[in-house]
Picture 1 (spheres, helix red, strand yellow):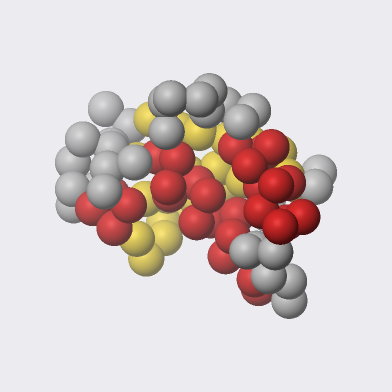
Picture 2 (cartoon, helix red, strand yellow):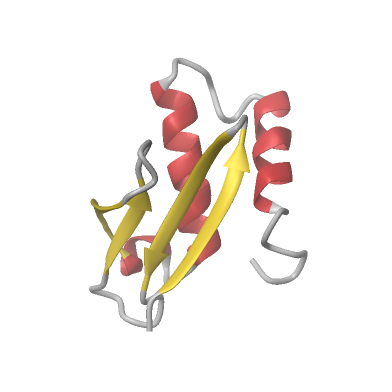
Length: 91
């Protein structure tokens, strides 16, 4: 069964969707027009973990924008966005 996770980060919505119990299931991402589109990733790439998949999508976007997602300020803001839907202990 496909699950989807969507968060807001700096006013933009980021999302991932997939059957996180199936290693070969393709991860879909929410594009800029808020349509689900296929990505190059499979569930196994993120060890069946939706948190990892969504965080990677945000970090990739931050990097693509020319910033470093590992900088403390950026990492904290990404953490805050992720905490919108992932409570401590559910990662």
